Image 1 (cartoon, rainbow, N blue to C red):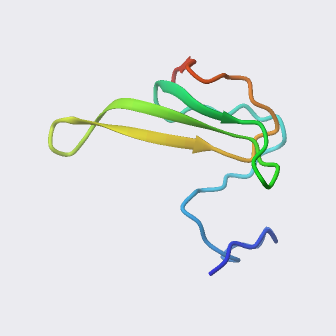
Image 2: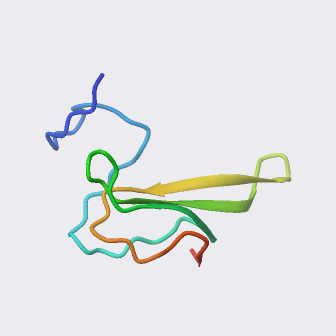
Length: 86
């Protein structure tokens, strides 16, 4: 199924979770990490960032690396290489 931008629930699907908020609402990171990518405008004009989270505990008692992405941003106030806290 294609993801349609008509703002109707179940209109399409993708792997992200869209959380609607007023423009300018601060976005908080899911965990401590390092900003590994910032994009001011992709091919659709979307601003987004990607954060790398090292040392996340896994089910085997070890750790793993996770990445989180934050899309549809009205502005970006971090830069690549910047450390962020949860």
